Image (cartoon, rainbow over all chains, first blue to last red; front, side):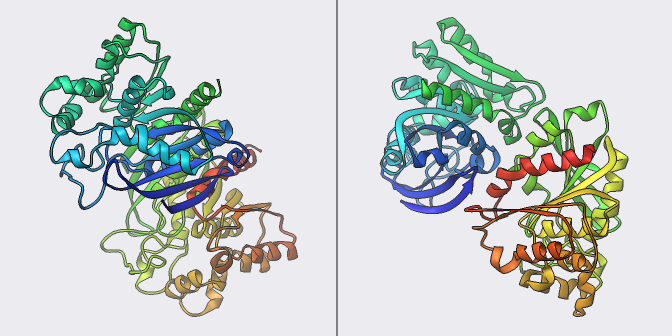
Length: 276
Length: 276
């Protein structure tokens, strides 16, 4: 592991690291914020998954989460959104290939060599974090857009691993929208049956559960009606009696200005669950 | 004026505008955050001046100031840091030309056609803001690094215009450090007598005053000992009995992680003075 960046922020340290990922077969970057309290005691971790086109930088430079992580004594890990590098397959479009990993384990060529973000987030990254930083084994997960999809899927499929889950403007049912159909047909192939394990709405309808799901969605979000379809998750949760809290916000869009406004509520939500 | 960007944030609006500046003889961009309370009453304005290489974007995307502007009911205007465009003189180095206006009125060719940031910030921009947004005529000023220098110079020379002044890691005496010597010799010529009006330490020593000056400086700032020399301003203020509050912070550097940690204190400081 190599430390690439280090900043002091709200009495804690924001660092960025590079390491070789054997799951993704390439070098990967991730960011980690460690509050001051971690000098005295191990702290639980919130994993944050970013959206399309993002890297490990977006959340740490634009959301302002450090204040709330510091106040609530949780460590926050923000990985890059896909494998990267000259030898990693890519595509000219912003919604496929590098920067668009969709948090799946790809089965199709050429993606299947590197695109295993599901396993990376679930297994390799936490192991690395637990071996190198003052963390407990308690973890929660959140994310934005494509990262919201990733957080929901990881939490629903691994309820014993993640204490709580939340999302900003998640792609709740990639199988049913253009972003997801494009990505999944490339990464997972044409058989839509194989998509169901990466679709939070399908997971819920197939009996997967969570103690609670917390979502913020802006109503001025230009992707809300075309790619996000939040109501599909609301309907699925209601039909399966899975507790869900969705807050719809007038005027707010898909940007980090929206995230920065409400990130405090998400950090507090997870911190409370992680303390239980 | 053309609106380029608009986001809802902390119940207010963050917008970015383009306009033709007759002071700078080019198109300019500026950002303005307007809290919700401005729908009912006019609010005072804090002008924020950014540092070398920055545009109007850095402060609005990275500092997280919107929360505090919203809570304290002040409007915040963040202009670009220099004239811009194909027809505006530039230089290959990051600390001269576009992105490095140093908030002076240049007297030397080729800079003197466009580089009048002092007049732009003092006169043209406030007039534009007052004609188009729900502001009072009360204003304060703050900034970072080169922008901290700009804020100090503008406030010291115009105590009737600016209610209060603060800065993060300001270049307190550009005449005495490499950044300033390079910029001033190009913009203002070799006669250092002409630099004094753009040097906060020289201004203080020449009898200019402020009600109070509030500065935050990180002690892990890599420019602290080479370009900033905060103690020069401290000494000048003490010798001339100008009230100054300087907070030195262990571990903090020159980045926006530093600014985001302490921006609340600056917003509250100005809001309190502006309410008096």
